[in-house]
Image 1 (spheres, helix red, strand yellow):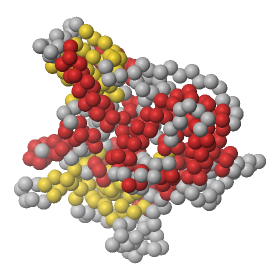
Image 2 (cartoon, one colour):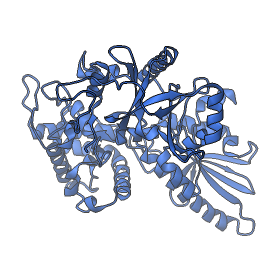
Image 3 (cartoon, rainbow, N blue to C red):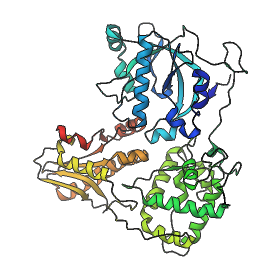
Length: 511
């Protein structure tokens, strides 16, 4: 039987009678809750992220039990997330206090958003609904100790960053004892979910359709005009990046920047495949007149949903014929290499713009970070602050403050530079840092792991050459301002890369 899945708008309308498009689709992000009471105020409906449910086998009877943490306050939430988090906590507290049943529906997150440190609903499963039982007091303590719940969450890659003053509450997914909160529609029988439910995929699933494209009054831009505008948008995007980290742009985001919309006024990415092909053609023609062939700029634009979320659409195969046959990891590696070339191209992109006849181009002054291998927007303030913080507080990485040499941007003989190094006669400690800017493309954290491997090998080679008789111990660590994505934790462990994460320069005041 096909699973019944629906988008977020339809889900809240059918379960709680809540129309998240009431003001407009553009307000949906503001008006979509994390949980909500049903229209009759008799039950609370909660979002359960499928990847945040811990599955634990109870040794007493061998049955699998499932748990979630809800209602906590994360230190990473800001702005709208804080507002939704507070509302969700209040609703949970009220439901518990008034003994109203609490239901959780499983939601699938958008993979590309997770890579950027955000959570967006891809779809809800209407037939994956459980009642939630809250655990409190001595019963909670006994259960957590017997099932080792805290460690089980960590082992399953579910890293919870709740504030210790506002931790999440433990709920168990149990069999339903109350009626499911589900609004009927004309296609349903009493109490029975339909076998299938239509879920409308994002428009970018078909980027080559021109259907429903609407132009602004007085404008009739054809694909060539859009290509000029898209080229300018992509070049400006590349030049604005920091710390040699390329944030990817979705087709929808590109459509929004181009003012390309459908009849409802929403960004309309269909047909952008044709536009990006023209962009690539213009760049290739311009490159034929230049000494350095330009890189594949259109590879910055990626899908936001589906199995290839975070990767370019099929049009990439025209430039990279072998790309489609590569495994996912190799595709990511190829993209990261190309993004480095795009950033390296720096102010030479202005020559491409001039060749394309894009008006209003002004010279850009971009300073290159020594040894970084990239131009872009240079080094971010966040990266500078984290690097200086580690330089000032070597004890965070296990280095005494009285070591006789400390240096930032330490030049290696491989032509690279490492962010910070501490040296004594007995030990060399190198530190590569990744600021919160890397959240814009979480593959940069993976790159940081391999950079640590490379830098350690180079430093060991230098130590071997310089100190053949009394070779110092060499260690390289990776320091992150944010939390290392769970997907990369096992890789770091396998490669013996020591990662110190969630280090904020703001913490200097407490040291």
